[in-house]
Length: 191
Image (cartoon, rainbow, N blue to C red; front, side, top):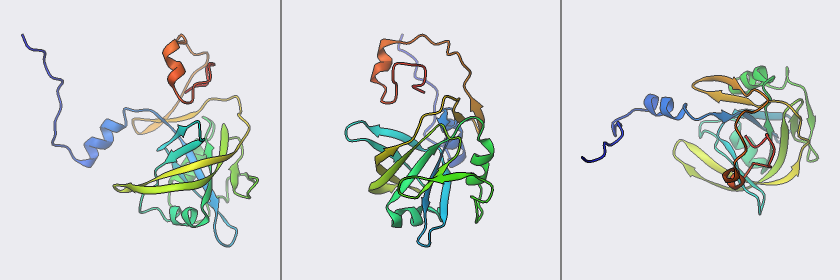
Protein backbone atom coordinates (compact mmCIF):
# COMPACT_ATOMS: atom_id res chain seq x y z
CA UNK A 1 0.00 0.00 0.00
CA UNK A 2 1.36 3.42 -0.98
CA UNK A 3 1.91 5.96 1.80
CA UNK A 4 -0.78 8.60 2.13
CA UNK A 5 0.08 12.18 1.27
CA UNK A 6 -0.60 14.79 3.93
CA UNK A 7 -3.79 16.75 3.36
CA UNK A 8 -3.23 20.15 1.78
CA UNK A 9 -4.38 22.49 -0.94
CA UNK A 10 -2.72 24.62 -3.58
CA UNK A 11 -5.79 26.88 -3.56
CA UNK A 12 -5.57 29.33 -0.66
CA UNK A 13 -6.00 33.04 -0.04
CA UNK A 14 -3.99 35.46 2.11
CA UNK A 15 -6.19 34.79 5.16
CA UNK A 16 -5.54 31.01 4.98
CA UNK A 17 -1.82 31.68 4.49
CA UNK A 18 -1.78 34.00 7.54
CA UNK A 19 -3.57 31.36 9.63
CA UNK A 20 -1.08 28.67 8.60
CA UNK A 21 1.91 30.93 9.30
CA UNK A 22 0.37 31.86 12.66
CA UNK A 23 1.17 28.33 13.83
CA UNK A 24 4.81 29.41 13.99
CA UNK A 25 5.58 31.22 17.25
CA UNK A 26 7.70 34.36 16.84
CA UNK A 27 9.27 36.90 19.13
CA UNK A 28 8.29 40.55 18.95
CA UNK A 29 10.75 43.34 18.34
CA UNK A 30 10.49 47.08 17.84
CA UNK A 31 12.74 48.51 15.15
CA UNK A 32 13.71 52.11 16.00
CA UNK A 33 15.74 54.95 14.55
CA UNK A 34 15.88 58.74 14.37
CA UNK A 35 14.44 60.84 11.55
CA UNK A 36 16.15 63.74 9.77
CA UNK A 37 15.19 66.29 12.46
CA UNK A 38 16.18 64.07 15.40
CA UNK A 39 12.77 62.68 16.34
CA UNK A 40 12.48 58.99 17.27
CA UNK A 41 10.62 56.61 14.94
CA UNK A 42 9.78 52.93 15.21
CA UNK A 43 7.48 50.03 14.38
CA UNK A 44 6.67 46.60 15.82
CA UNK A 45 8.20 43.75 13.86
CA UNK A 46 7.79 40.01 14.34
CA UNK A 47 9.63 39.06 11.14
CA UNK A 48 13.10 39.33 12.68
CA UNK A 49 15.92 36.82 13.14
CA UNK A 50 19.64 36.47 13.64
CA UNK A 51 21.13 35.66 10.24
CA UNK A 52 24.88 35.13 10.65
CA UNK A 53 27.47 34.99 13.41
CA UNK A 54 30.45 35.82 11.20
CA UNK A 55 29.86 38.53 10.16
CA UNK A 56 27.22 39.42 12.78
CA UNK A 57 24.08 39.96 10.69
CA UNK A 58 20.36 40.24 11.44
CA UNK A 59 17.36 40.18 9.11
CA UNK A 60 13.92 41.77 9.32
CA UNK A 61 11.10 42.42 6.90
CA UNK A 62 9.14 45.70 6.97
CA UNK A 63 5.96 46.08 4.93
CA UNK A 64 6.34 48.11 1.75
CA UNK A 65 3.44 50.29 2.93
CA UNK A 66 5.26 51.21 6.16
CA UNK A 67 5.65 54.96 6.67
CA UNK A 68 8.49 54.37 9.14
CA UNK A 69 10.70 52.12 7.01
CA UNK A 70 11.64 54.85 4.45
CA UNK A 71 12.84 57.05 7.34
CA UNK A 72 15.00 54.21 8.69
CA UNK A 73 16.28 53.35 5.22
CA UNK A 74 17.33 56.98 4.65
CA UNK A 75 19.17 57.05 7.99
CA UNK A 76 20.86 53.73 7.17
CA UNK A 77 20.90 52.50 10.76
CA UNK A 78 18.48 51.14 13.33
CA UNK A 79 18.10 49.47 16.72
CA UNK A 80 16.30 46.17 17.23
CA UNK A 81 14.60 46.13 20.66
CA UNK A 82 13.67 42.56 21.72
CA UNK A 83 10.54 42.87 23.86
CA UNK A 84 9.97 41.12 27.19
CA UNK A 85 6.69 39.53 28.21
CA UNK A 86 5.95 42.64 30.31
CA UNK A 87 5.96 44.87 27.24
CA UNK A 88 2.63 43.99 25.61
CA UNK A 89 1.60 47.65 25.86
CA UNK A 90 4.79 48.69 24.04
CA UNK A 91 4.05 46.17 21.30
CA UNK A 92 0.49 47.50 20.98
CA UNK A 93 1.70 51.11 20.68
CA UNK A 94 4.24 50.32 17.98
CA UNK A 95 1.94 47.90 16.17
CA UNK A 96 -0.80 50.50 15.70
CA UNK A 97 -0.85 53.53 13.41
CA UNK A 98 -0.11 56.83 15.08
CA UNK A 99 2.26 59.75 15.06
CA UNK A 100 4.05 60.01 18.41
CA UNK A 101 4.59 56.42 19.49
CA UNK A 102 7.30 57.50 21.94
CA UNK A 103 4.99 59.74 24.01
CA UNK A 104 4.15 56.85 26.36
CA UNK A 105 7.32 54.75 25.99
CA UNK A 106 10.50 55.35 27.99
CA UNK A 107 13.74 55.07 26.05
CA UNK A 108 17.40 55.99 26.14
CA UNK A 109 19.74 56.79 23.24
CA UNK A 110 22.02 54.09 21.86
CA UNK A 111 25.67 55.05 21.23
CA UNK A 112 24.55 56.41 17.82
CA UNK A 113 21.59 58.24 19.40
CA UNK A 114 18.80 55.89 18.33
CA UNK A 115 16.02 54.78 20.72
CA UNK A 116 16.66 51.85 23.04
CA UNK A 117 13.35 50.99 24.70
CA UNK A 118 13.73 50.53 28.44
CA UNK A 119 13.18 47.05 29.92
CA UNK A 120 13.64 45.26 26.59
CA UNK A 121 15.30 41.84 26.89
CA UNK A 122 18.17 43.13 24.81
CA UNK A 123 18.88 45.43 21.89
CA UNK A 124 21.27 45.57 18.98
CA UNK A 125 22.36 48.66 17.06
CA UNK A 126 22.82 47.93 13.35
CA UNK A 127 23.70 49.46 10.02
CA UNK A 128 21.71 48.59 6.90
CA UNK A 129 23.76 46.27 4.67
CA UNK A 130 21.29 45.29 1.93
CA UNK A 131 17.60 45.64 1.07
CA UNK A 132 15.90 43.31 -1.40
CA UNK A 133 12.38 42.66 -2.63
CA UNK A 134 10.21 40.27 -0.66
CA UNK A 135 6.75 40.48 -2.22
CA UNK A 136 4.69 42.94 -0.17
CA UNK A 137 7.67 43.36 2.21
CA UNK A 138 11.30 44.42 1.96
CA UNK A 139 14.00 42.01 3.16
CA UNK A 140 16.53 44.02 5.17
CA UNK A 141 19.91 42.68 6.28
CA UNK A 142 21.68 44.66 8.95
CA UNK A 143 25.17 44.40 10.45
CA UNK A 144 25.30 44.40 14.26
CA UNK A 145 27.58 47.15 15.57
CA UNK A 146 26.67 47.39 19.28
CA UNK A 147 25.01 44.82 21.55
CA UNK A 148 22.95 45.82 24.55
CA UNK A 149 22.82 44.25 27.97
CA UNK A 150 20.76 41.02 28.22
CA UNK A 151 18.09 41.13 30.93
CA UNK A 152 16.98 37.94 32.67
CA UNK A 153 13.29 37.90 31.82
CA UNK A 154 10.85 36.06 29.55
CA UNK A 155 10.31 37.02 25.89
CA UNK A 156 7.09 38.40 24.47
CA UNK A 157 5.89 35.95 21.84
CA UNK A 158 3.20 36.08 19.17
CA UNK A 159 1.25 32.91 18.35
CA UNK A 160 -2.08 32.33 16.56
CA UNK A 161 -2.91 36.01 16.58
CA UNK A 162 -2.20 36.67 20.27
CA UNK A 163 0.52 37.15 22.85
CA UNK A 164 2.21 34.22 24.56
CA UNK A 165 5.03 33.87 27.05
CA UNK A 166 7.32 31.06 28.08
CA UNK A 167 7.42 29.63 31.57
CA UNK A 168 10.56 28.81 33.53
CA UNK A 169 12.07 26.42 34.30
CA UNK A 170 12.23 24.90 30.87
CA UNK A 171 11.22 21.24 30.88
CA UNK A 172 12.72 20.28 27.52
CA UNK A 173 16.05 18.52 28.03
CA UNK A 174 18.99 20.08 26.27
CA UNK A 175 19.84 18.11 23.14
CA UNK A 176 23.12 18.01 21.28
CA UNK A 177 21.33 18.87 18.02
CA UNK A 178 20.43 22.27 19.44
CA UNK A 179 24.05 23.37 19.16
CA UNK A 180 23.33 24.03 15.46
CA UNK A 181 20.80 26.75 16.29
CA UNK A 182 22.34 30.13 15.64
CA UNK A 183 21.05 31.75 18.83
CA UNK A 184 21.41 28.82 21.26
CA UNK A 185 24.09 29.50 23.86
CA UNK A 186 24.03 26.24 25.81
CA UNK A 187 21.69 27.59 28.50
CA UNK A 188 17.95 27.93 28.60
CA UNK A 189 17.84 31.21 26.70
CA UNK A 190 18.29 29.87 23.18
CA UNK A 191 14.65 30.55 22.26
